[in-house]
Image (cartoon, rainbow, N blue to C red):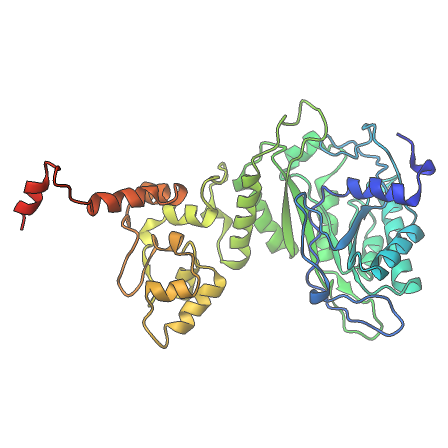
Length: 427
């Protein structure tokens, strides 16, 4: 729908902001550029809000596409070439003026700038670069900028953009090459991974005389979940490879949203708990020293009723329960309900006293989960130390099974109960 020329800047902004809302990889932590006299804005951790709306938009960033005119016809994308939707584009200077005006009004604290592929990857990347140069030089903007790299763009354009951006990202889109061929045949896996490799070793020389450092906030990527038959086991192994091989700051998972009708796409979106389980597993890879191979077989999906850490623990009950007063840090990290911070607190606190369940409660350990996998000074509170199915039932059914077990064990005696004489006869 050719409306771009007739729309006002505000109307075009509405179109392009709406087109960008499906990209969730706009987290803004990691940059530390401070304020400078005569310049606009600053960029540090405290100055960037990390709040997100329910559909993934970061509320503190001006998040938009430069254009939604696209040469590609990806089956899953709302901006695909064959879709009859309102089309618009913003010029580099128009974006700069929007950023300046919104920033001065305290509406935003940074910019997330992406684009559909108009004409060619190089043409689109050149326009993104022009916007960054204008913002940093003429408009003297020192705030946060996250720019999406266009797969297939020339290496020198990506290198130049890295000198002005705080974070860059290349969306891997789909978990496997077969899925990419099916739903986005114009995109090539090599065109996506090439800039990832480049950004993994990219240095930042934006200020003369400043020692060369990595792009301040690193690079991220995003993949769509549930549009293809790819399993969670495949996805989490891919994420592990991205963290290890491309030094990713974050991998984001976006549950497939049906915006187009096509026989190659599922009619319904996936259960949103699946996206959540992948984020939990991702966290275990990055902070808990888990390997993807430990968490899940390649052909399987994560259970929706329990988190991946608990799932691993139930599959490895021979390693539990662990005694919190003597277990090593690595073992404590693998206990469901004990996080990185509390594992460290336990290690420190037990140097001075013997820890009990009351001690753990004061530390805010998640005891409703942890109690099945730990002992505290020899005490175990879970009842089912060696039965994975019963533990799982307790965890997924609000401890109903545990309550039934306790009721059976400590049943109130009734004068009309036929078993009373038997019970009294045991004394």
